[in-house]
Length: 128
Image (cartoon, rainbow, N blue to C red):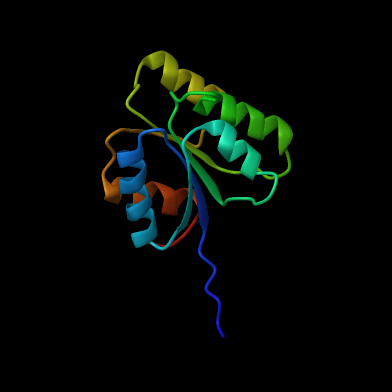
């Protein structure tokens, strides 16, 4: 039996409807998705499995996207997991902070499926 390895994306999003929508877009484009409603749950799962990419909202309860990124960078130093933010918060301060802490990209919500696909394929060096 042949096993097809699909890239794994941790999707961290507290809006359930948006999470389902983005999960479907990712799955349609060949990704496995593990969805989490906030950063704390995603951080806990990192002790068990390593994703190829973390796609995260910024503003969430318990552990926001910036706190998650900081935790991953300090706790899993050797993993070097790309981090993309999805956020409706597009203030210059947020964009600056995202870049300063090493986010690979920051996409505005709502993001088109095509933009999301192109960005992730580019980050993971996959051919479209």
